[in-house]
Length: 326
Image (cartoon, rainbow, N blue to C red; front, side):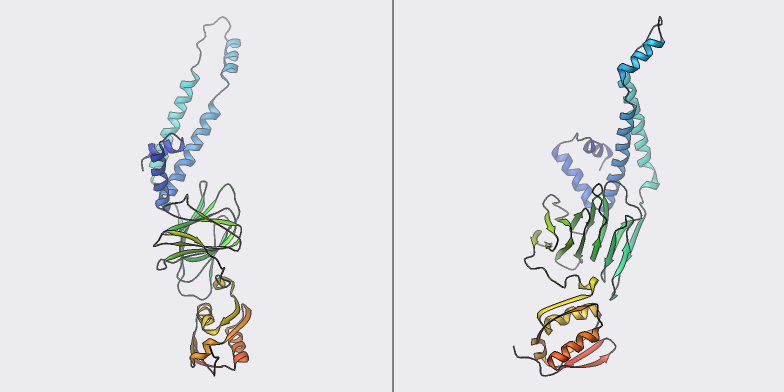
């Protein structure tokens, strides 16, 4: 993207097609967006400078007249003066953009592996992020321009500081989430066919990278999906209670079968649970565990259904017993 095209966009002096081309270029990747914000920041400063130099021509002429009685007076061409200022500032803009030091914006990158405990990250604006396992977060050391933009691969829970003049955006490979200030969970693993967002407070807008204008607005307690293959946005009908249990470590089971509970327990506690009798999976229970040890959960199952637990290894257990009929 050439500088004149960007400047025309900033001046609202371009065709709809040219405007769309700039916006597509901006949304293509974070580097383009950073470049655009740098150009816009300097250009706006240039405009403000020109406006500050624009004097009251009538008042200036009166002052000149009063100080030059009897002398030949040459009226100043202020429009030419302002044009000169703009030209100088534009040259300064070009010089600024040509400097090699502005291009590599200092970035931070946090990558998590297979840890069972979320990794907490503090962003430059005071926002907090908790990263789930196998996730990556990329963000600048300092947010510049009019937006706060981070990149996510994997899953993270965001608690964003509110700043209406500087919206917060999370970009993934296929979708993006825009907010002002709220808390929410974003799941965007590369090998998953969906990007999922669950909102705990505030409101967010979920959209695809290609069609930012077609967004799905989600409020507190709502969940939305972007289906990558079909390029479709959809709001969930039923909110999953344990969707962010990886971060809160609060498990809520409501008439849940042991077979349904086991995958979640394994994921949260990084263990393997095996059923010696498949009928154990049919047993249903209701309980809430607030960051409790795994032993408490296993003991609850044992008390309710006479299940015996045998530890095979440090992170592997076998559950045996009569079980429950279907």
